[in-house]
Length: 209
Image (cartoon, rainbow, N blue to C red; front, side, top):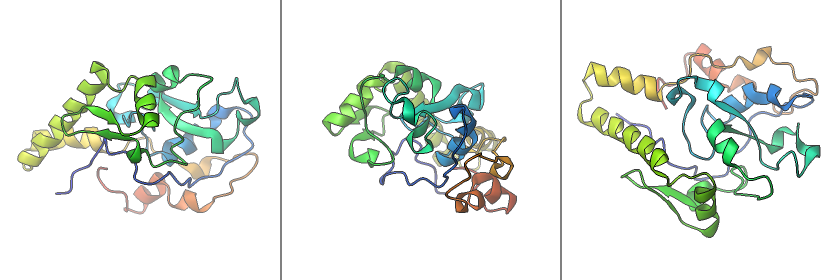
């Protein structure tokens, strides 16, 4: 059984699959961003399904802050998906690593014991800014990795499997992007057919990730 690696940072820069434009309220891009970044925070990698309020605990993050570059407030290429905790900790006047330009695994690594380490100065700065080495963040990673260990050691345990699927399955409310009609159109229409919702409808979406 191939188990997920929930705290493995991407080995390549994120390539955007969607290209909506024209919304006057940047929050209207959230359905696209949820699908774009697989329902998890780009900074801490925590997932919607780990939060009691699910997707409500996540929001639209501006890589270049609205205060410093208001012209990019509704620019999809400037938007990321993050948990509200990381979003609230992001400084306004400091540019951090851009996951669409940088492979974050070259800068940050989570060890098997749940501890996190910066491999570069930029990585250490990102860890500090989002408090990723603080005890609450470390405990989340430890508990998650402990569940994976239990699943690995007791693959036939139905109770562990049920918890495992709740933790690593996709959200129930996958966004149907065909219902979204961005005023400026979508420059990457192929992403709709490859969305999580469309793949689930075709029976192609894995049970967990």
